[in-house]
Amino acid sequence: MATKLKRAFAVIVGFVLLMYSIICSTYMLRGYTRLIGFYALEKNSVDVVFVGTSVTFSSFMPMEAWHDYGIVAYNYCTNVQFENALRYSLKDIERTQKPKIIMLDVAPFLYAHYAGNEGWDKKDLELYIKYNLDSRKYTLDRFALVKEMNDDVHGSFGDYWYYFFDISRYHTNKTVFEHYDNASKDIERGYGFLAHNGGAVFSPEKAVTDDGSVMPLEEREQEYLDKLLATAKEIDAEVIFYCAPVYYIKAEHLGRKNYLKTCIEKEGLTFADFSGDVEKAGIDYTTDLWSRDHFDSLGAIKTTRFLCEYLKSNYDIPDRRNDERYAAMNRDYIEWEELKAEYEAIDLGE
Image (spheres, rainbow, N blue to C red):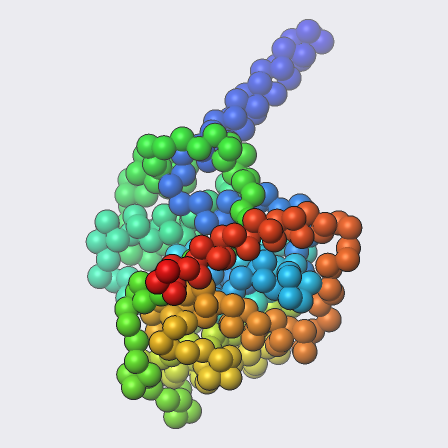
């Protein structure tokens, strides 16, 4: 009897190890890996996390925040992160990090990423699921996100089953062995470079001003906002909802912003509105933009300082530069400076 139990136990352990190995191997083939550096971080080592989309990852340079302010930060961002994905992001962050502050960019709600999905075809759905899953680890929340997105466009299990397991169309043909455990160091800490005018040349004459009007969200987005606010109140970190200092070309964007502000503050949460602070942040539209609402490296330096000043002025964020635990970041900064110089040379046309 004891021998049979030992064999059964060995089979179970072997099966678990095999499945773990298979899962880790799938990470080596992922074609979207913006989040992968997050999982390589030392546990509970980050004080500030920025959550959002390409608007967010192009506007904040964690390594500059470190060098100038001693703020230990990371960008937990994906392309076109959807409104419903944000609450899963908050929970994923808290699994391995216990940040003091989470800065959550409300851009997905302003641009109604989710509201326009009735017209999506299968190809669109596949792309957006890829973006929103990015390199998230396997969790029940990750599976729930896949199902939620598909259900909202009335898909069938056959339309999306492979996204649950990161196989088939989610993968690339290139194998990156250092991604085996879904954790590979990112020297940029989630910052994503976008070259000057790469998205479009912009002139402020096209921008709209905030007249204080309010535009409620559609029903589905409201449901996801309510769930997001509930999650923000449940987690340990203080979640600061914010609107980035960018240009807006549609009044509806600012109308949604004003509506969000009311909903967020009604729940006792903080809404930091920087939408009118483009000039205050020192942004020069002729040199600092990838497009009207994304930044090149020159603009990102300015918005990083602007946001760091806000954090330092309003919250007790420690300066870790003399903390031995973070000594490696000083070494990393040398490598980061080389990258930043390359980015600036591109933006300056050198």
